[in-house]
Length: 247
Image 1 (tube, rainbow, N blue to C red):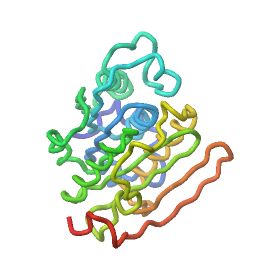
Image 2 (spheres, helix red, strand yellow):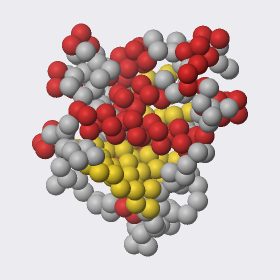
Image 3 (cartoon, rainbow, N blue to C red):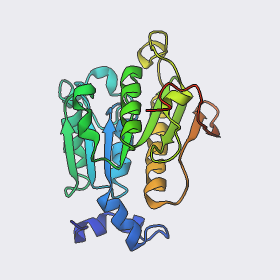
């Protein structure tokens, strides 16, 4: 598989950038990216991955589109309400690049179907579900898969890429919570649509940085308060008390 003449025309302004030499363009073409959750983060994330030349994408989302999604989940419109997010996202993104290879699973990621992630180069968790995040984290750790945790709530963003092929640093090192009953959720404390959008864009950039090896994003927690545009990057280290240390 290679980029067609149409694709080179679509991405012409991108591919003339210094970092997009022929070798790096081939990396984009071959990369296999899985996204779990096609909500406020997943929508702009997938749009900018496709518009950056990523061709192999796998989506997981079992939700149907609701009216309350439309303010921040920018792939969808009123005419899509009641349809599966994964299918609508695939259809609309294919109109940007019809040569994309998108696999859409209209199901939640659970223990029984985690095996579908094994072929991924990078796995992005945009679920806003603590139980699912912990499940994905442990699976990626055991199978040496690169995992990005991307979260946005209220006006705050947290994003971190965990490289599970070297020293142990994982989501559980950072957040050792076993239960999520008391954790805030977007449906209870709200979320800015701009906050979700920025989280999707920065997550997309971290993926491109990683694939093209232009910046070391491993184990760096990016925190953003969109209300004042403050950004901090914190290097995460192994938590010796992490229960997954010997997984």
